[in-house]
Length: 252
Image (cartoon, rainbow, N blue to C red; front, side, top):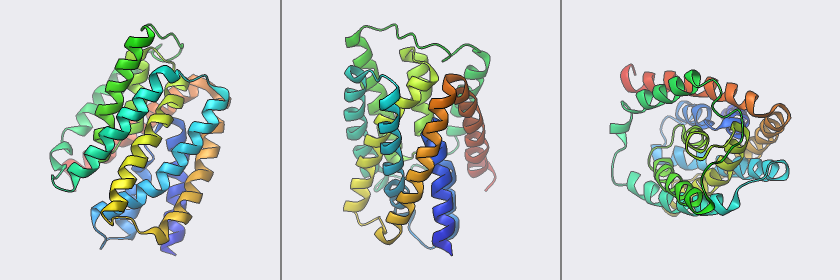
């Protein structure tokens, strides 16, 4: 029965992740609740074993309908992979607890900025040169890749926000681009967790299949309804992240 509930959580996580990121908000708490005796690194490893497939499938679906700026996203994905590997290694030796109290306030600033800027991300209008865009995307990938491997909550949403704010993408192009980078960061973190023995593969297949199913549904909805729909989902997911991370940091 616990595997069934984990699969349902993984499906919902894949759905949310495919649209705007933040699937870990659903799957990670479910894993902590259903497997209370497991090591936290093992639960994060199980989460990555599902999420990497969902984000990869979403990236493929988006790439068929949305033109990705590969001159920027390939360096971003590579830097994200390097950063995530370093972050996943760091979490095995350093506690990320100091981020718990900071994260809700960072997310609140992101939410407020996006809400105030009504036209933010409505139009796809990159303003940087190819070289500058590649450098900026690589920096974003490296920093958020490290964050994803080290701590993780909201990585996909942060990628979307920064691609919109700094690169001038609309929310649909930002979400599509974030999937490519997030696939690389998930793969790097999963590789390290697996190397350290922190993945229970008996759960991985079922959760991956469920995550892919949710991802397919979410990506199709995002492509059908466009940037405005993705923006609304972004605001909803970031609000939920604020509530969840705030509760974890100050109440629980």
